[in-house]
Length: 312
Image (cartoon, rainbow, N blue to C red):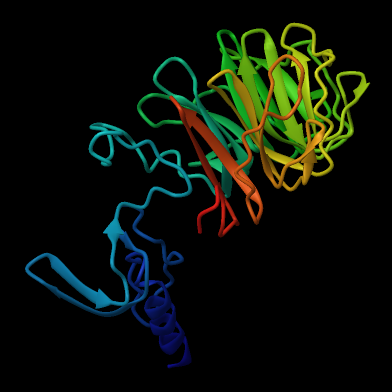
């Protein structure tokens, strides 16, 4: 009797997200319950369920229901729906995705903190084919991958790792975009890299480092994309740089700093791409800036602030 009660409790706890295989009859040895991966899931608790005529009606505290995509998924930019034929089930990631970039062939390169993509082992970096299936490509980073930039046949990655592709690489590496093989490029940052942006032959990096590319650089640097050497560009931030964006003739930085480019700038700044000096642009965020994007004459920022640009 006790065994039957436990089975019911298990079903109640999981019903909001999935169906499970039925409990075997008393005395019959069965396989452990497994969730139906194709059933849509909700964003809140389910308190009631009724099944009739092959339809399941559920009710609860949720206000959205949709397919189980895991922590990452491609969606149609115009409709917001899954692309036709896209297999969102085969590449569900078992951890957090921190970065993504198009692979140039209709698929995606993703980085983060995970160990599997679908049923395939992939440590912290993976490539998803255009149909949503995991690619054979496998650089195998030993810690988090936080930033990815694709440039032609080269993939630049940054994060917390100390090795990838079986080679020692401290927090920055360049990979062959087609094979995942590690290239000789090796700037060797002494602490984590959170952001990368490529402009021409220059790769901008932001993070927690104080040396990179063979030079002392506090939290932000410009590297030669071909060699990995640090250029003379040196905004010298006084705190972590967590986001970078390039556009409108500027390098935009966000993070935890209060001084950068030789001037007081609270957590967000525009830097001259040649000199590294802070421009007059000063939105003055009152909290951490974690994400930046540039489109035309607009800069989009995300983070933990409640006031920015003089507005709440």
